[in-house]
Length: 264
Length: 298
Image (tube, rainbow over all chains, first blue to last red; front, side, top):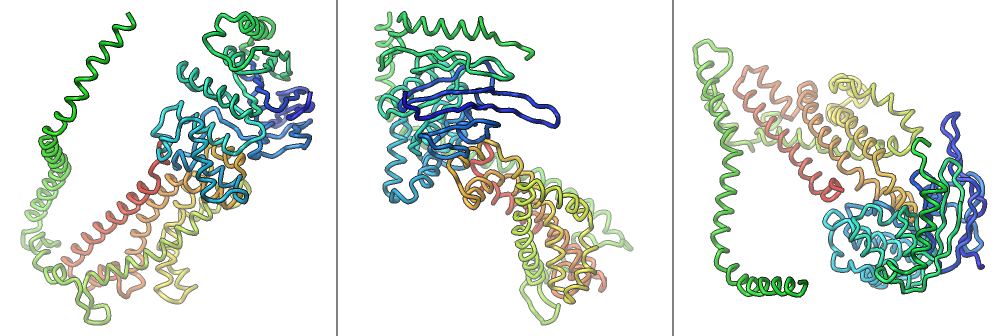
């Protein structure tokens, strides 16, 4: 297996005064180029912390993140994040939000006109070109998340990090957006790491599902390969035995072996 | 079942589509006049009550002060005494014998100068205090003490330092209006959501770009709250400061009128001071509304 993104013995300890909480313990994971990997676990298990460590927004206590064999420990556009609550800047239009990243990443390599075309290209990819001059407050939640995806894609990241990207959306919008992300992954072949707590979402989208045990000291409990051919169709998979088996496996992990402990 | 349902939709949709433009043309006029009527009604609702109250108060004032031996003049006398000042605000007989326009513009110039300085310095310091924990720990206690000092208490000190009325007055405005600007800006900067900081980090904005593209727009609603309080305080301070430093200015005009027992002129000047203070406040509020358009709602 060629390691494109490698998480090497990551521990994370939060210290507040005298109290220390070990959130993550000995996380090891290698992700291939073009792979779609989901990290699933109960809330509070530290999966968002793990994503923040990969993004460079939080430092690991020990261990590190290697991208193409180079250690990365500060945030950068090579690991663009799609945030859970879209995080679009409300004073900028849809176009300007995407342009902000493009202007920084391609300041030297692309001309003004090329950057403009590139922004529009990415807005077209997520079908949001029609709303280019709208402000985030004027578009729906699903549309905001599309723009968030366009902003991340437009930075041409080596790894696209999705932090529960569909968590705040209603079921229909979520399904629609999942299909869009699948189509984008198919078309562009990005390496994607997604945090989720939705079993169906994980099975439908991923090549591998990383299941995390409950915190504190959360570890990787199990890694499940999802051997379903792409392109995947939501409706066909509903009765597919492999799909159901994978789903069963994840459910067992989450609800039998590592049931969420309320008071933990 | 499904088929017929779609059919029904199509059938109702088509006639609506063909009729719509025809309907749209004819009622265009009535709604417009209706809109005008509504606008007039809404304006009337807002304008008439204060006018009625003002008329009533003026009437009461007139009745009370009309009696012989009254210390203050009634509105009718105020008007007849100050007619010349009202209708000729632009005369200039040299020295301080000038029309009200010149006095007000002198005061406004001082405010414009002192307030601009305090806006620049206040936002700068506010950003520093909001962004750096150490700056906050070091400076905040100082600010909390200094901001309680009344504006006029600074005047003797600034006269001693500058040895001139003009810069002293400007300094008093500066030192009076800077505190709310600093404090509100700092709160605004501290309240920038972590999300926006994360976005800036991923995009790798440098500190200057972060300041211009994230900080200022994100904190703009807070900054404008500070600026609005600041302009009000500046206007309060200038009238008081001018009474002491003399020269041309609405504050000294009032003091001078008192010394020559022109009570009507004082009343007229107060009227102008109030109106201008109100306009300044609205100006900054309007500017804030314009600039923060889109920032406020998330």
